[in-house]
Length: 137
Ligand code: 5GP
Ligand code: ZN
Image 1 (tube, helix red, strand yellow):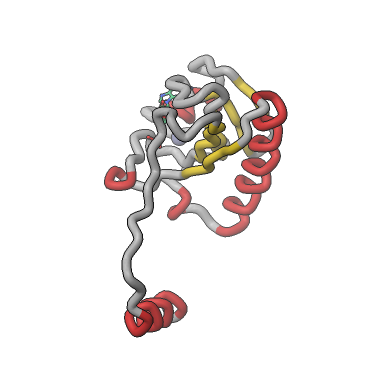
Image 2: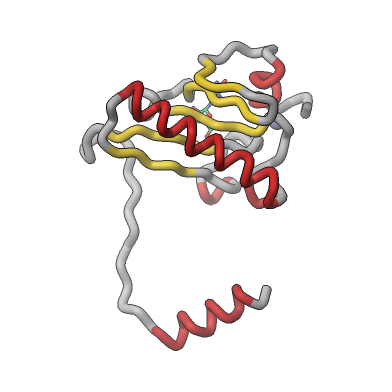
Protein backbone atom coordinates (compact mmCIF):
# COMPACT_ATOMS: atom_id res chain seq x y z
CA UNK A 1 0.00 0.00 0.00
CA UNK A 2 1.38 3.38 -1.04
CA UNK A 3 0.19 6.12 1.31
CA UNK A 4 -0.65 8.86 -1.19
CA UNK A 5 -2.10 6.52 -3.85
CA UNK A 6 -5.83 6.91 -4.43
CA UNK A 7 -6.27 3.43 -5.94
CA UNK A 8 -4.40 1.79 -3.01
CA UNK A 9 -6.92 3.57 -0.78
CA UNK A 10 -9.81 2.24 -2.88
CA UNK A 11 -8.33 -1.30 -2.72
CA UNK A 12 -8.00 -0.96 1.08
CA UNK A 13 -11.60 0.26 1.32
CA UNK A 14 -10.51 3.62 2.79
CA UNK A 15 -12.20 5.41 -0.14
CA UNK A 16 -15.55 4.06 -1.38
CA UNK A 17 -15.95 2.75 -4.92
CA UNK A 18 -18.65 1.13 -7.03
CA UNK A 19 -17.18 -2.38 -7.14
CA UNK A 20 -18.04 -4.62 -10.05
CA UNK A 21 -15.58 -7.49 -9.45
CA UNK A 22 -13.10 -8.54 -6.78
CA UNK A 23 -10.82 -11.48 -6.07
CA UNK A 24 -7.52 -11.96 -4.22
CA UNK A 25 -5.39 -10.17 -6.79
CA UNK A 26 -7.64 -7.77 -8.61
CA UNK A 27 -10.38 -5.18 -8.03
CA UNK A 28 -12.64 -3.68 -10.69
CA UNK A 29 -14.83 -0.62 -10.05
CA UNK A 30 -16.67 2.02 -12.04
CA UNK A 31 -14.57 4.98 -13.14
CA UNK A 32 -15.84 8.04 -11.30
CA UNK A 33 -16.07 10.10 -14.51
CA UNK A 34 -17.90 7.52 -16.72
CA UNK A 35 -16.69 8.46 -20.21
CA UNK A 36 -19.55 6.19 -21.28
CA UNK A 37 -22.01 4.31 -19.02
CA UNK A 38 -20.25 1.24 -17.62
CA UNK A 39 -16.71 2.71 -17.91
CA UNK A 40 -14.78 0.42 -15.56
CA UNK A 41 -11.24 0.31 -14.16
CA UNK A 42 -9.47 -2.97 -13.43
CA UNK A 43 -6.54 -2.64 -11.00
CA UNK A 44 -4.09 -5.06 -9.39
CA UNK A 45 -4.39 -4.95 -5.61
CA UNK A 46 -0.61 -4.79 -5.26
CA UNK A 47 0.65 -1.32 -6.13
CA UNK A 48 2.67 -0.81 -9.32
CA UNK A 49 3.14 2.49 -11.16
CA UNK A 50 1.88 1.12 -14.49
CA UNK A 51 2.02 -1.96 -16.73
CA UNK A 52 5.59 -1.21 -17.80
CA UNK A 53 6.72 -1.83 -14.22
CA UNK A 54 4.94 -5.18 -13.79
CA UNK A 55 6.28 -8.68 -14.40
CA UNK A 56 4.74 -11.01 -16.96
CA UNK A 57 2.95 -13.21 -14.41
CA UNK A 58 1.22 -10.34 -12.62
CA UNK A 59 0.28 -8.79 -15.96
CA UNK A 60 -1.13 -12.11 -17.20
CA UNK A 61 -3.24 -12.41 -14.03
CA UNK A 62 -4.51 -8.86 -14.51
CA UNK A 63 -5.42 -9.36 -18.16
CA UNK A 64 -7.22 -12.62 -17.48
CA UNK A 65 -9.48 -10.57 -15.19
CA UNK A 66 -9.75 -7.73 -17.74
CA UNK A 67 -11.21 -10.23 -20.19
CA UNK A 68 -13.65 -11.58 -17.60
CA UNK A 69 -14.77 -8.13 -16.42
CA UNK A 70 -15.11 -6.85 -20.02
CA UNK A 71 -17.50 -9.71 -20.76
CA UNK A 72 -19.49 -8.91 -17.61
CA UNK A 73 -19.67 -5.22 -18.55
CA UNK A 74 -20.80 -6.13 -22.06
CA UNK A 75 -23.47 -8.49 -20.74
CA UNK A 76 -24.77 -5.88 -18.30
CA UNK A 77 -24.71 -2.87 -20.64
CA UNK A 78 -25.46 -4.62 -23.94
CA UNK A 79 -22.86 -2.28 -25.50
CA UNK A 80 -22.17 -3.35 -29.08
CA UNK A 81 -18.51 -2.29 -28.93
CA UNK A 82 -15.74 -1.57 -26.46
CA UNK A 83 -12.25 -0.11 -26.07
CA UNK A 84 -9.72 -1.43 -23.57
CA UNK A 85 -6.93 1.03 -22.81
CA UNK A 86 -4.10 1.47 -20.35
CA UNK A 87 -2.30 4.80 -20.23
CA UNK A 88 1.34 4.70 -19.20
CA UNK A 89 3.01 7.93 -18.07
CA UNK A 90 1.81 11.50 -18.43
CA UNK A 91 2.46 11.89 -22.17
CA UNK A 92 0.09 8.98 -22.73
CA UNK A 93 -2.54 10.49 -20.43
CA UNK A 94 -1.85 8.63 -17.19
CA UNK A 95 -3.12 10.69 -14.26
CA UNK A 96 -3.31 8.05 -11.52
CA UNK A 97 -0.01 6.26 -11.01
CA UNK A 98 -1.32 2.86 -9.91
CA UNK A 99 -1.73 0.41 -12.81
CA UNK A 100 -5.25 0.38 -14.22
CA UNK A 101 -6.93 -0.84 -17.36
CA UNK A 102 -9.93 1.11 -18.69
CA UNK A 103 -12.86 -0.88 -20.04
CA UNK A 104 -14.94 1.57 -22.05
CA UNK A 105 -18.22 0.37 -23.56
CA UNK A 106 -19.05 2.08 -26.86
CA UNK A 107 -22.63 2.67 -27.89
CA UNK A 108 -21.94 5.07 -30.77
CA UNK A 109 -18.85 6.55 -32.46
CA UNK A 110 -20.31 10.01 -31.70
CA UNK A 111 -19.55 9.76 -27.95
CA UNK A 112 -16.86 11.64 -26.00
CA UNK A 113 -14.00 9.21 -26.58
CA UNK A 114 -11.75 9.91 -29.55
CA UNK A 115 -8.92 7.63 -30.56
CA UNK A 116 -7.46 8.04 -34.02
CA UNK A 117 -4.55 6.41 -35.80
CA UNK A 118 -3.06 8.55 -38.55
CA UNK A 119 -2.07 6.50 -41.56
CA UNK A 120 1.41 6.82 -43.09
CA UNK A 121 2.93 5.36 -46.24
CA UNK A 122 4.84 2.24 -45.12
CA UNK A 123 8.65 2.37 -45.30
CA UNK A 124 9.50 -1.33 -45.27
CA UNK A 125 13.23 -0.83 -44.70
CA UNK A 126 12.53 1.26 -41.65
CA UNK A 127 9.97 -1.26 -40.40
CA UNK A 128 12.47 -4.13 -40.72
CA UNK A 129 15.18 -2.17 -38.88
CA UNK A 130 12.83 -1.18 -36.06
CA UNK A 131 11.39 -4.68 -35.71
CA UNK A 132 14.94 -6.07 -35.46
CA UNK A 133 15.85 -3.51 -32.81
CA UNK A 134 12.80 -4.39 -30.75
CA UNK A 135 13.41 -8.14 -31.15
CA UNK A 136 16.95 -7.73 -29.85
CA UNK A 137 16.22 -5.42 -26.93
P1 5GP B 1 -5.79 7.70 -16.29
O1 5GP B 1 -6.02 9.11 -16.76
O2 5GP B 1 -4.67 7.64 -15.28
O3 5GP B 1 -5.63 6.69 -17.39
O4 5GP B 1 -7.14 7.28 -15.57
C1 5GP B 1 -7.44 7.57 -14.25
C2 5GP B 1 -8.92 7.41 -14.10
O5 5GP B 1 -9.22 7.32 -12.72
C3 5GP B 1 -9.73 8.60 -14.65
O6 5GP B 1 -10.58 8.15 -15.70
C4 5GP B 1 -10.52 9.11 -13.42
O7 5GP B 1 -11.84 9.45 -13.74
C5 5GP B 1 -10.46 7.92 -12.49
N1 5GP B 1 -10.49 8.29 -11.08
C6 5GP B 1 -9.71 9.21 -10.47
N2 5GP B 1 -10.00 9.27 -9.15
C7 5GP B 1 -10.97 8.34 -8.93
C8 5GP B 1 -11.68 7.94 -7.76
O8 5GP B 1 -11.48 8.43 -6.65
N3 5GP B 1 -12.61 6.95 -7.91
C9 5GP B 1 -12.86 6.37 -9.13
N4 5GP B 1 -13.80 5.43 -9.15
N5 5GP B 1 -12.21 6.73 -10.26
C10 5GP B 1 -11.28 7.71 -10.15
ZN1 ZN C 1 -1.40 2.26 -5.41
